[in-house]
Length: 293
Ligand SMILES: Cc1ncc(COP(=O)(O)O)c(C=O)c1O
Image 1 (spheres, rainbow, N blue to C red):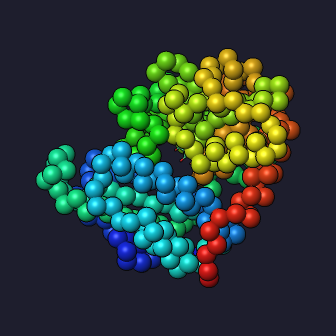
Image 2 (image 1 turned 180 degrees about the vertical axis):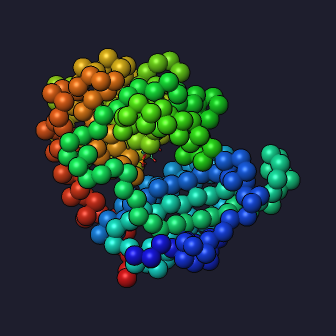
């Protein structure tokens, strides 16, 4: 696989890619991104990712974005050029180029970057043994400052702070609460818990990114006849869960076996978690936009 970049429609190897120093996302975090996986030459849930991206563009009032089908074609072209069988696609959109906050004073032609690379968040053993997490002090942003459902670049400063906090405590992930103290999500993943065979996950109104992997797990649960509740959870609900796991495009699905030094269930990945992981891997192989070589 060759790591490739598509910068505003031009394909190039990663090492040759450059961004203008006055790119508004570089200066202010004023942009959006998506991380998408390729499994077996299939781009998983491409339309779902693109719909979220275009929803974010509307919300942030990013003007002059390239048409949906054009972006989709560029992504497929970039994946084909990289010859990736499996990999990770990063799509970044910034408002444009120019200094100063006022969009009126900059060139509001969005810069659209697509990169195809490899990404493994955790060593494979951890997917078997499960991850230890801690609750971090950094809270998710409130929707009245920046709606967490927008996958905006600038927002991730606080997620990185939360990750640093978790790392310093020797944990694999940090669980972030919302301003009211309810469980929201991990730094780059959504959270699920299992109580008496019922799958429970924070409702989008808790201040989470409405993850595509989260939606996929809900879809799988419906198909397998597992009841799902989107609700408000406190730490008590996690400490007392029978099982827990995290979901995200980058992390995929990883069992969470401990939170704040308390074992979840018996402290090993649970049966329902394993079943969902198996089904998820099956679907990633079978669905998605097939790309040529
Ligand atoms: C904060 C946050 N929550 C949840 C997710 C999971 O979202 P998805 O499954 O769409 O990758 C991500 C991943 O991008 C994230 O950054």
